[in-house]
Amino acid sequence: MPALQETRTVATFTPAKPAGLADLGVPLGDTTVVKKGRVHEFLQLLQDGAIGRRFQDLRVIGVQTIEAGVPSARVFVQFEVFGDNTAAPANGVGFEVALLAGAQRLASLSSSSLFLPYANFWYANRFVFEVPMADFDQADQLEFIAKPEEVRAV
Image 1: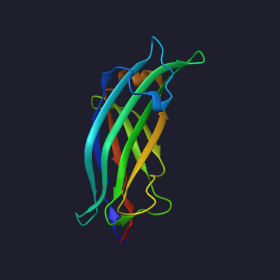
Image 2: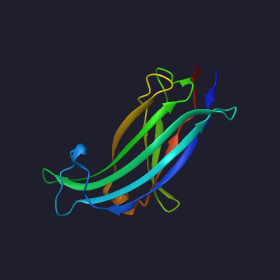
Image 3: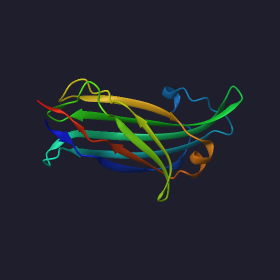
Image 4: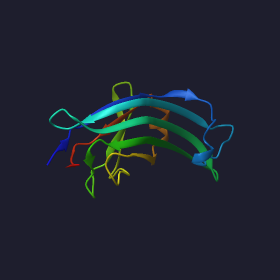
């Protein structure tokens, strides 16, 4: 059975205006802090070097805000994924993200699956992670790690 290789990419956070967050439901206030990063496209190769999965428009949005009097920090990870002649297993391994301050890893977060029900089609994915406030303040990058997993050839 073919297997995907682990693949990593890094999105650099930059301070951003709190515009374009309406579809995320972010409660905006005077103290809201927003950081955004983006990677346009990256490939996840199979062990034989062929393209197995494509990711595009990886958008990372970090938000520190107050809701109902309680401060919080969250990171939204959004992307589209395409199984390039490969079908994902029913119980996939998902992906991991790491908040970074330079080379220092601040926090590791993971999701157990991608929304990729069929091969050869683009699917939108959206995830949110709660992060410690101190890690949010220090983070200047987010590393996205597409985990290795066995797939079915189509």
